[in-house]
Image (cartoon, rainbow, N blue to C red):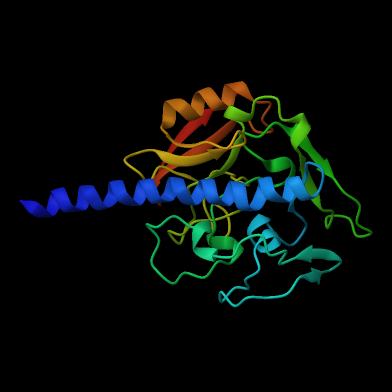
Length: 229
């Protein structure tokens, strides 16, 4: 009789810890970077997503110095603990490679993120350009998706969740309703909260999204289609 109650308590504790992780990621990564660079937040390029750019750890969790990957800077050192980039429901020890961090923005494929706040930088090779979020252009910060729970076909988090074409792969996935049929989300005004399917429908209608339909996943084989504008 005690096991269901203990499991429920553990799940609730994980959900609270996940919310705290998301807030830390938003503050230590995106907001602090924006403070350092006049409100321009570097979050993606042709090779790397936000976790590899803003962290200081490689795929094995080993700390690295600031480096260049085909001319784009990575390992910028804003995160001192790679575990905050992951939901605590994941198995302990999963390295902080970009495939297994919270899902965040990805150039023009960002769902629930108005494209007007994005800026593409210069790179001599097409497709390798750095992308920035311009903080001063965020007009609906409380409803602009920053980071959130995601899942891919391997059952892991995935930072490139926004490139959804109806099916998950090992490197692409969707928003995951992993906490009592809700996904925890950090927003650009600094708050984080659990969002249920109806909430995602509302969010999709409040921003100028690049995709009118996206998917919420209950598990690897069950999805909910949600329409935006």
